[in-house]
Length: 354
Image (cartoon, rainbow, N blue to C red; front, side, top):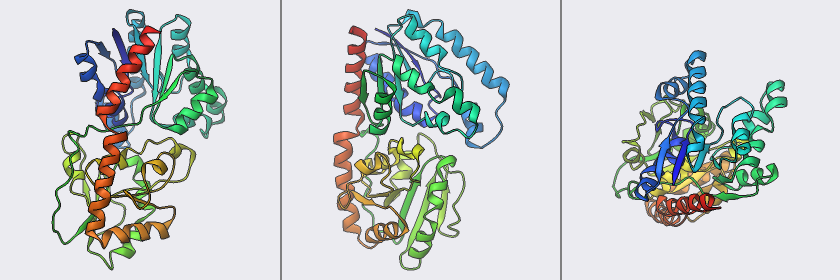
C-alpha cells in the first residue's frame, strides 16, 4: 500500500507531530510505503509563534509546492489530509480528489470550521462557511479527535466517521519520581496563542501563594502571565518537554467556554496524566470526559472551583500521588499510542480494501 500524507506542518507543529508523524515509523514497519508532504516549514511556524509577519510570497510558494505534489496523488492508494489542503481557499482540491475517485481520509483535532463560519470578515463567512463540511462530505473517512468534531462531520454529511483521540507514547511519558520539596509546582504547557487561558486564573494563584509554597512553570508560552516572583518561563523543545512536565506536581488546563475550545482534544491533560500528575482543568469539550472529578483531578468551572481544586492538591501530597496514578491508568487505557496505532493501521487497510 502506498499512502501520501499531507500534514499542515513539520514535526515542529504539535498537531502534525501528534496526528501524523508519530505514526509514520510504525506504518513503515508494517510494510506501508509512506510519503509525507507538509504545507508549511519550520520557519513559518517559528514566525507564527513569535507573532512576526510571514511573507505572502513564502505562503504562495508553499501553496504552489503542495499543488504540484497533489498532481501525484493518483500514484498512491490513499491520501491522508490533516484538516484541509489549502487554508482559506475553497475546497476545490479535495473535491477534485473525490471527482477523480482518489480515496482520501481527512483528520481533525481542532474545530477549524470555526475559522470560517465564525470569522469576523463577512466575505470569508459567506464564501467559506461550509468549506470543511464539503471536505468531510467527500472523504472516504473522517477521523475526529473528539465527539464535537464527530458531530460536525455527521451534520456535514460524512458517511464514514471514527474517533481517534490525540495520544501520547507511554514509553516516553513516564511517571515522575516522588520527591520531597518545599515548593509545589503548578505547570502548564502550550503555545503563545493559548497562554491567555492561564492569565484568567492568575487571581486564584495570587490568593493561594499567600498560604502555600507554590510556583508556576510555563512551557512554550514564551512569556509570563503576571505572576511575578512565582513564575518560571521555560523554552519548549520536543526532546525536553517530557522532562519538563515531570517537574510539575499539578497540571492545569484552563479554557474559555467558546465554540473553538469545544473542538480541542485535551492533549495537555493527557500529557500531564501520562507523567502521573493530577490535573485541574476547565470541563469544556473533551476535557469533561478526560477529567474524572475527584478521581484523577478536578473540574473547575469558575475561579471559586479553581481555587478549591488547586487547594486540595496543594495541601495533600498523598492525594496528588493517588490521583496521578489514576490518571496514568486512564491514559494507558484510552489515550495511548500503543492502542491508537493499531486502530490507525486497521482503518488504513479497511479504506484501502473498500
